[in-house]
Image 1 (cartoon, rainbow, N blue to C red):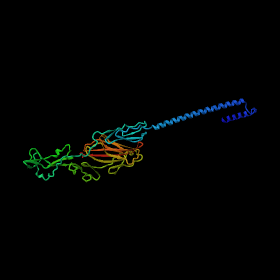
Image 2: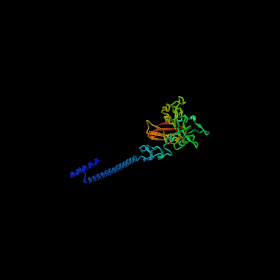
Image 3: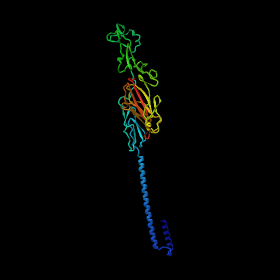
Image 4: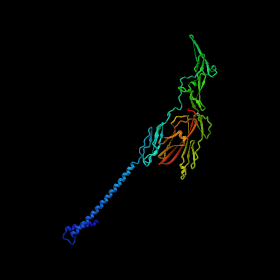
Amino acid sequence: MFVSVTTLVTLLGLCTLHPTSGQDCSSRLELQGSLKQIQKLLSAHEASYLQNLRNLKKKINQLQSSTGKHSTKTVNSTCPKPDVPVNGRKLGKSHTVGHEVHFLCDPGYELVGSESRVCQESLSWSGQQAACRGWAGETCQSRVPTFFATITNTSAYTSAAASTVATDTAGTFVHPSSCSTVQGTTHCTCEPGYTISGRDSTTCTDIDECELFHNGQAGRLCLHTCVNTAGGYRCSCPAGYNVTRDGRSCKDIDECATRQNNCTKDQTCINTYGGFQCVRVECPKISHAFYVKTSPMRCERNPCPVDNKLCSQAPNSFSYHYLAVVSNLSAPRVMFRVSALRPMGDTLRFSLLGGRQVRRHFTVQRSDRLTGQLMLSSPVQGPATLEAEVEMSELERRVQLGRYITKVTMFVSQYEF
């Protein structure tokens, strides 16, 4: 098409330069007709070019609009920043879809709501808003109370004067007083641990320190049992304890360390407050999986066949731990921690296994990204034996990589010391 246009333009030029050559050139009218055709042809080409240009601009605008929407969607594909609970903190900085955040409470507070929340595709968080609630009751209590006495009546003469001490019909220790007369006035005194009773100044009666200081403001004289003696008192402890050097408190006897136990060779001796327990760890029997004991307190799963999914879903290991605590131990407090030394996945989850009885006394909280802790949530009256199982799961993009079970057995003494 462009060749024909060029040829017509050339012919027009020749006719202009040589107007006398009518036989070789077309007439002026034919040339004018040709020019009009050329003009129409150029106009058609221009219109087509403009239309193509408009279509190209439209496609470019659509492409830019689509790119802008995609960019906006990418920028805004995050969940709103979750609130950090008062008296607590949040773990996890990423708020994009599929990521998790975790919540912890300060000591003395209980987590209410979801411990972990996931940013969903709807750009909303799963679970419930976390909050930290203060515990009811005492948050700090000494395991062994402190005792004070304003009067010490232990007599150095008790054993020496035992042969001269008598008892009345009521079983009270009596002793003659020591009297002297000065300028016509008689003064009588008693040995330490005795007092003059009534009008009879010649008789000294034993002071019952155990009754006098039983539940007074100064505290009891003895941690366990107070025994009144002639002119004094002594403290005794229950079986499994020895009296300490101060003569008032009780110290647990470690029957395991002193070999005062009857545990067999295949058992492990666990010392408790006031006694001991003989335990024997046996690996669990689970279908589709086989466990072997790798240490006295740990069982690990044998490698699973490639095509055995049930085996791969079974726990990788079981660990056994035993704790000895006193009765009515103050709560809340951390009893045990579970941590991953070399985590393989991108997420660790900690959970408490068992029913209502276990959850009545225990909870599981996360102390940091790699550590979970078993919490005693309420005091336990002894004697009692409680068991709790803490499960730690490793995940990679929400796919489970491994499960690890920690079994904690707590022996609660019948005494508060």
